[in-house]
Image 1 (tube, helix red, strand yellow):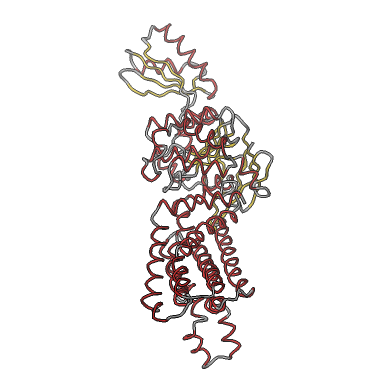
Image 2 (cartoon, chains in turn brown, orange; image 1 turned 90 degrees about the vertical axis):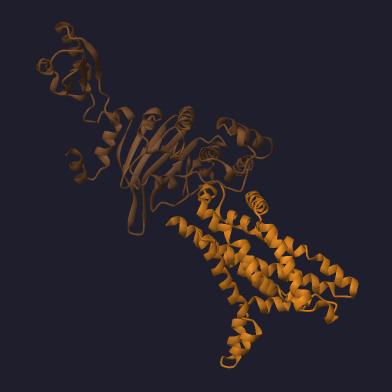
Length: 320
Length: 244
């Protein structure tokens, strides 16, 4: 549905986006991750046709954004960063205007506005002027605008920014639900969000894609991924550790805490976490350890994120 | 075309939901009344025409039109709504024309509301209504030219004040280039063809000739080309701003 090839953008001498390529099909939700200034917003602005790329190709459905922008834009719903809207309009007036520009008039317009209002829970503020709304409502109003024409492609720039935890949850549910039928790109700083919503995540750093995979695949890149943590109610940490070290699939282990005992075992291969956990389970029952917890670490996205996006000299610092 | 109307309609609603439209119309009516009756002594003149009314328009518009136009694009940029507008399935040109037409309509409405003057002068004497009609058209075109310049300056900046001042200065140049006190000064040291050439750029020259009651195609062309040029420049500025 979205095909981006070798997208580049420079502002004067500064390179904002440097050769980004990816494709998204219907039913996929792509999370865009990256530090501030990595080029996420610039990439989204190019995909939506707001700014022209310096180089590269953008295809929305079968339409080329550069050669046939109007047809391409029809397929897209866009929530820009900070969710701008016309402050002097009422929520209803704004949505109806957006629907009209999307070519919906008369009854179709009314239906589209009613649907968007219902989906975004805007009923209570329908006739209020947008400037009097709280940030959450403003955000949802702009979001409602982006889905008003039920687009095949949704581009959301930090859709949960500035929302309270309940609203964040609602927004994620909404994105996940719509992701079943649409191609969605959304950017975020919140890593749990990626796990909760995305089918695939891309990490951008300094204008380039540095990682691309399912959240699970990305987490496997973490040092902790596949490690097995064992917590016991009693016993001695040193004794337990020496036993664990004898398991052939275990590369090494560390003591997390002496009392109560907690030991983490790292497998030789990240994928063999299951094997290690099974071996530990057998060992525990044989040794009659009182197991409180036995868990395979999934790896942590924030760790992977930091590992990939920090400049090399900073990585050293955080390790120390 | 439909898109232009949708955008113009929204813009108009924006003008009327804020005090801008009302303030503009009221101030325009008050000031034009004041100048016509108090400064130009409409009644004492004893002439059955509206010259004492139209003669102030280039100066009134100088401040009032940029006040209407200054937020046209600067606000879109300041609030970020330009990103919304230009990612809709509309061309930048449709947005530019739609916004321009809405503002022009406000000015046209203000002008229309001066109709009691026409009734008064017809009641008191036998004016040449053809001349009055032509002057109204000329005034509207002149306002359009100023407005297009304001559109252009408002696209340059996200700051309304800067937009206003630059627009006033540019419009002032268009007045002064053909204002008799300035042209008389030029005549003393420049060649006549040069003075005429500069004056041809002025709204004064063209508005004056329309006020004589003749809608000459050259004058129409002048105003239309100022509008066309300024709006085209607006589109260039917006594109350059997006391209970064």
